[in-house]
Image (tube, rainbow, N blue to C red; front, side, top):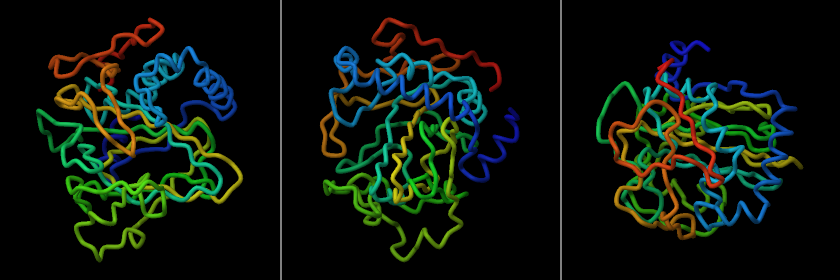
Length: 296
């Protein structure tokens, strides 16, 4: 693991990877166990969000609780974002046979939808480090034909979309939309065509992952195969970032979310700011054990 190369590559591209966390056979067996746990009524009663979007299942599924602190992932995040890291959200990204591609989009504060208020607020600013990162883990194969991710390298250095412009949710996931939000409507230059840029298609085997900033313009291909693609996003911020601000609830993707059971998880270092409510253990009473500052 060459963290200096990771830093340089990320600064140039806005993403790094893919890297191998586990071999495909190991990931396939592990994911089979997680699917079983996700269907367990006892686990569903402990969900952080009582909602079909299935946010934050790392708070109640032990296997996912351990995944978010995997050193292969977290050490690379430390190299980019700093020693002290919070996981503020996780989510599943299934793409079933026949599903359309996810349209190009670009965010930073996660002001998605009808509100112009972001969910993330930096209290310190460093031009050398982003205020958020996502690790996208392939639970299954992610190939061109079943909907792998695609990115535009270097696009994190220029805003092409106004993420604070309000969008209306249209209730569908048609082409050129992000799960019902059409980012075409908030392009700064209406004549700019992202498909004419240097597009990279990030094909991955099950068990691989890549790390990117959501400022790096990204989307996914349609699933024209007969195989499901399942990805899992681990979203993190430095500890100086305030998550959800004073929100107690929010609406997104046509659903209502109550933050009563939400809490950030410290995955590395220490939280010297105290901006956010922390979850010290998952719903089964297992403690989250953050990595130390080594390797940052």
